[in-house]
Image (cartoon, rainbow, N blue to C red):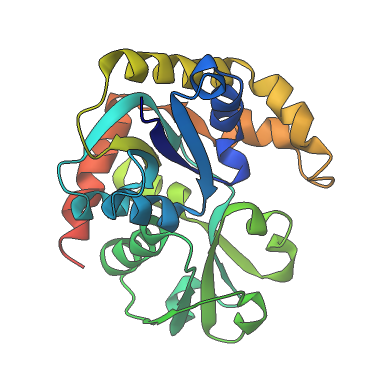
Length: 250
């Protein structure tokens, strides 16, 4: 049997999922293969048919033919997420340029949606290819996501948590990534895969302890329990639908 190939986001917020998958019989018995990638690459692999399942940024969903959300788990939040931020030395209304993190389309498009519909500003958007934190100065702000955000807020006068801003704007939570397949897959394996994710979420306290040493000045357990919400419930489905509607207009 050819194993089902899975791409998962490599950030800290996905470690409970990774723990569940890596400790599953599906992986140990060769039914699945796992690769770890930045969010944008997860989507690219699914679009290019390099994998069968991906933890995909929601902005990429329209580009995936015949996509199907296959899990009740996601990377989401109910308010602040603490790791997807707009950093600036000036307030929103004074920002003229925004540097966009190359690692995720969802966050940069969320920024554009908020600029147009909530903040009512019209900055120039600048794509990036590498690290650019030192270029955030004057009226040039920057969107940074993932583990690189931990403990850098002290360098900036203004930090805007994008999912918190979305919640203020829409009164909805936010979902950054969902588990997606690009083809019909064995239903028994999908059920076992869902159980893998469930098992990983049930071990959040243990996973937090495993990674705490790598993030010495950051409370990993608090991040998992207070900032990330892993359940793809109806409010998050509504948020996803609304985001995709706004995405058509930018």
